[in-house]
Length: 120
Image: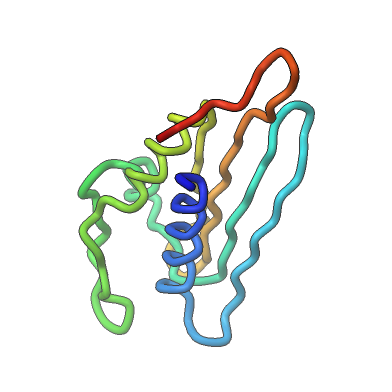
């Protein structure tokens, strides 16, 4: 349930900051004992100055014009916290403003020796 919230937030942000007709891609793959899920878009991107702080609570980039529909600045902070509660981590990538962004979530897969972590 909480992971659904993570991906709903990431996909919602991608839709919010990508122009109509733009591309949003969701990909999942297995790499060893990890699931790697990537949400990538060709939207407005993230400035190099903001990228290191993108998961900080209440951190927001100054957006003016058509994409000035900022939220409260808690969504990506919540994403990070929920992913970490599940024993994973999330990272953000962008080549800069107007160059899109990618959010990569890495989660450990369960096995007989390592059962699923439950987050209520």
